[in-house]
Amino acid sequence: SQQGEEDPQALSIQEGENATMNCSYKTSINNLQWYRQNSGRGLVHLILIRSNEREKHSGRLRVTLDTSKKSSSLLITASRAADTASYFCATVPPPQGGSEKLVFGKGTKLTVNP
Amino acid sequence: DTGVSQNPRHKITKRGQNVTFRCDPISEHNRLYWYRQTLGQGPEFLTYFQNEAQLEKSRLLSDRFSAERPKGSFSTLEIQRTEQGDSAMYLCASSLGQGRASNEKLFFGSGTQLSVL
Image (cartoon, rainbow over all chains, first blue to last red; front, side, top):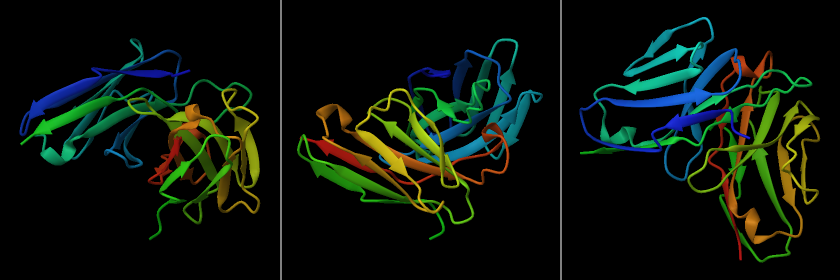
């Protein structure tokens, strides 16, 4: 079962515009992570935000976390064609017998048109 | 190259055949994960190892799937009697494994694309 669910499923924008993707999750978390996946490749870690943080920045990325709404958003500013990829949020569900698996959502497919 | 390495990159097999994939994690990483991903979906957890110990296995993993990490370094994932539904990208990831998984980022390989005809 998937803990996180991204919205929208697909997003198409022009180069230079901002892209916002949302993630909703079901249970309490310690942290939330965002990953990027270029077509046919493995995932690359982008950013980790802890449950006691509300906002975090990394270059052109801005992540917010609202634990009361069980949601997170990823903002990519001044997008480039190279940002075209799928973006996934991932969390570790509450410990059940010591589970340490990272659970991914279905992802948002972002297309940045030149 | 000090990243996670997966071999082969592509595998085409006939239904009923056995296949084996290999993953070489980053050398100092203690934790190793296997995920499966189908088109348009996120990675789905299969199993993970802490050193050589297999600590968790997904309930979705049938008895036809087996994974090993004999010396706590590389890992193999074997699928016996493959079915068309096994066609997917099989991803391996590793992490330091020194604390809670939620605190660690995963480093992924490029995956093995399996096609079962």
